[in-house]
Image (cartoon, rainbow, N blue to C red; front, side, top):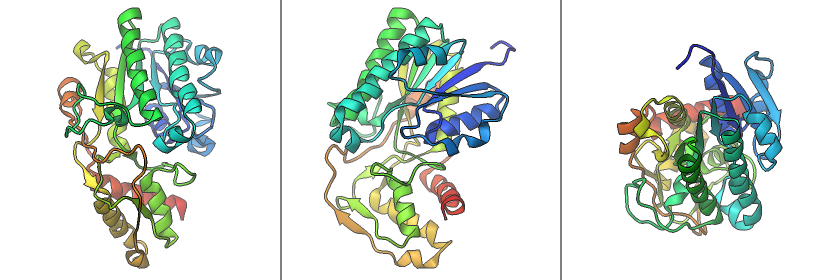
Length: 326
């Protein structure tokens, strides 16, 4: 690595994961540019960075190639987080999900190639495992996608592979497994389960679990995800490039276990939350029953060493929500 300060573009930088990455890399001394159209990200997530001399905000959409070209100019690295998440959203509106997640992704690849970006690290997804029932999930064994969202994230991997082989662009995909933590939005129709349940418990409302609560997830705390992005961006191991990695803790909890631990943590702040009942609904279309990542490949090639188990991460997340959302 040279001594000149390196420049990173973080797309979707005002979102949950993106804003945490912006914070982290600013603190590490990088120049950081955030590209966001604020469709799902929030200005308040990056408000504190706007006056920082090494931070720059470009308000724009990855569906516009000119915007992508402008944003990638003179950048060393791209951390591509911008996407329309949510399986249910993609089932309701597959066209928009495809425009953002596939066309937008391709625009970013083309812009990165044209501006000679050194490395393109992107948010892939555990949804790519689809109907594969094998556990734990190993990167090289996937099934058929179960939703339009899953298709878009798989197409991203295919495009990245082609761009690395055809144009020599270094790419690394990070298959995120149910990321949670500070700044994850509890509001809106497509809110993730943990922040949504936190808000409901804080209001003494009964959360609804889809199914009987036996579905399990490899919930992954945000700081583990930041570690993976940094390792992917900085690795000097050529064998580690142009592939995909599970980004997870490598353990799973059922939704019932998750909700009980959530109640336990929140009850320390408000004892009456322990009395709030849980409601069970129908299983959600497109949901994978069980999700558990093997993180052996990331350990071997990137020296990944996740510090936050689910219970430790949940303590941190609940503390943040209690202090910021009350």
